[in-house]
Length: 335
Ligand code: NAD
Ligand code: WQD
Image (cartoon, rainbow, N blue to C red; front, top):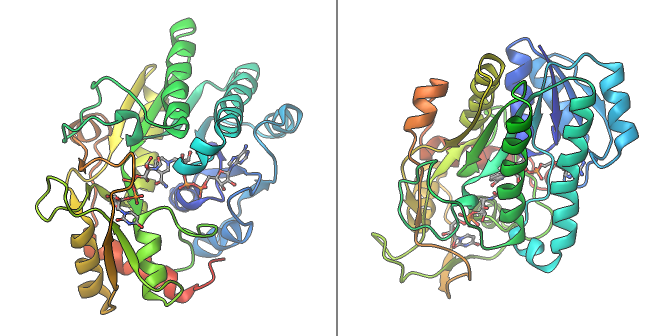
């Protein structure tokens, strides 16, 4: 099939492009490179020995996007493009609503005009808000604690309402838990700008000597060692989940929200320890105050993904640590 991947130069998008190409799909990427580099696409091509059709376009650019649909026969869209920094979204809510929500409205309008009505969307476990009832199941009520999360919740709603009005649409709303790791080649991976917000890129930057030590945000949570517990998922497992979701979306005229996680939670200190053993690299750390907005525990109920997508994760936490480390140590400055 011909798949349009918005945000395909980004962390999860680039790994998904590899899986799509390896499964003989044609890949068309639209990315404005606001949080990524074109080099990621070159490396996807090197890994797969296949070509990606790349357009440096903003999804807010109606005319540009329209041209992409006019110049290509597109069967379905995997929609990754979006801004994702929780803290920044609190500082600049309009930027987030404009980019993520208006961007999706423009995209879906152009899709409709060209009669492309299949979409796989990058949602997030953040739509479960402060719900402290892990394993989190898809039918829980949604709530959010920051504008970033609110964009995900609204976009899910927009896709559902579009389907209500026209049952020719179908969509899968993938709620990712905590993606980490990298392609085993070590040539593509997560390349955060500035100080990383997320745990794993912070750990690898400490390990490579770019930062002095990790700050652990609180050790007084109600968890086995007091530090926050999350469901870390290998980005290659996640990327494979998109292929399964794509198959499902092509076959079923419905909208389904589906968790993509492992169903197992690890604490911050479990992460530090597994990283040390798996990579033989120490990560000095200090305990500091809790980060506002964090919850103690968050992990997925994975039954729906198994049942509807026939998908399960294959990689364990040590694999994730090793692969994150290979990417970081081979590319200390990123792309
Ligand atoms: P990323 O920033 O690496 O990738 C997003 C890509 O979208 C970037 O290449 C960026 O340049 C592009 N982009 C942003 N706005 C655009 C626009 N207006 N037009 C065109 N391109 C645009 O992020 P990622 O980690 O790969 O995340 C991909 C998606 O998954 C995002 O929607 C994110 O919100 C969601 N998600 C990520 C995580 C995570 O922890 N990484 C968790 C849950 C959900
Ligand atoms: C994981 C754990 C921290 C950094 C975020 C978004 C969520 C989703 C995934 C997009 C927590 C602790 C972290 C550090 C630490 N993204 N930590 N020191 O908060 O679960 O989820 O990314 O949709 O929306 O909120 O991930 O990696 O930031 O934190 O102690 O320097 O590590 O407190 O327990 P989080 P994270």
